Amino acid sequence: MMKYKTLILLLSFLFIFAAVEAAGPGEKGKVEKEEEIWAGAGFVKPKVEFIDVGRFYEKTRQAFTHSFDLTLVMFRGTGWSKKVVLQRLKKVADIFAQCGVRFGRVKFVEAGAPGGVIDFAGPGVGDREIAEKVPLTFRPVLFYFRSIPKFNAYAWPESSEDEEVSDALRNTAWFSLSVAMKLNIKIRRPNYVSEAHELGHILLDSLGHAGAGVENLMAESYEFENDRLTADQCRKIKEHRLVIPIAR
Ligand SMILES: [Zn+2]
Image (cartoon, rainbow, N blue to C red; front, side, top):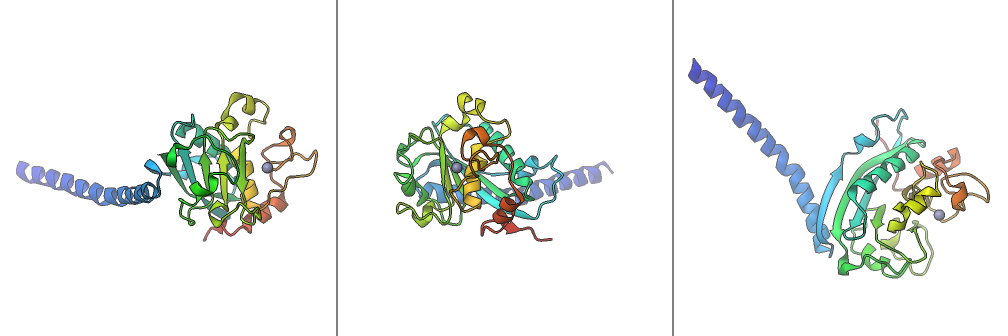
């Protein structure tokens, strides 16, 4: 009798072990494959993680009709941390939730910057070279740098007509550590976050701002920036080609 029990116990362990093994390589393989892509493109020792986006919506009551995928690239040595980036991403989730839009797949990549460039000259100078290393299917993509002179953050929407813009730059946004520094946070509303503003430029496909004195996520100056989007902005966001209706 004991022998049977032992055998059953042993078999169930083997079964669990086999199940874990079967589930393991799938996810692990996916990550490894991604890391190969980033390493091959010149990103140094990339560490890729697929973020469980459910954590952002546990307390959200909003019904979602649309989603968009997101790739985050955080360069090492910039002062950014994954913890800070994900805390800020929660605010981004809340802001777009008001439109019924949520994250699809969020990929977080931590890597050494290609060529070690973590301080950055500015729009059109050096960003194109980095954007070109990232496959075009990974958009929108947000890059986290240490500093960008004269800029806290900026974005290249799809229809940017600047002569510097290449297809690789479209639907990318660039962030200096200054947006996460105390001084910058102090002058802004607690629910505002620059990633949402720059993603707003991308998803509204416009570098335009709300009119003078209008309080909005896309306000013209920081005194008027808040976490609100109008019904019209929400409608426009859902028309963006990267914002996909959720199948029911
Ligand atoms: Zn802006």
